[in-house]
Picture 1 (cartoon, rainbow, N blue to C red):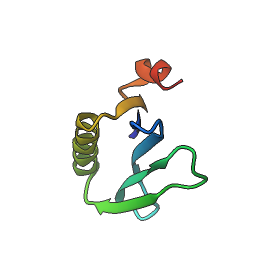
Picture 2 (tube, helix red, strand yellow):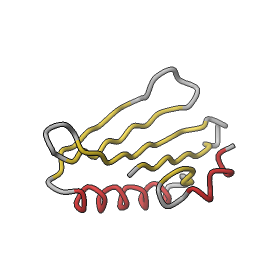
Picture 3 (tube, helix red, strand yellow):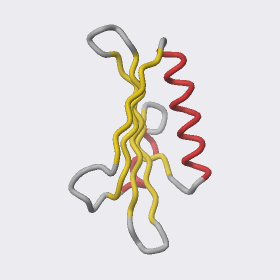
Length: 89
């Protein structure tokens, strides 16, 4: 599961937020969050959390996505949002 969100601030800076759920080599599910300013070379922060199941990780990822949407972010890419990719151009 992969989600990419972005928003433009009042200062015309474009911020991004990536949410990724994947399985590591040990069989654990990882909820990874990366965010920052698109104009920077690297991310501001990367947070990875180990979850017991894909369902738990996906539930938390969708909750994070909802929180970010309420703060003005727009979902650009993702498993369920491919039709919105043109909004990110």
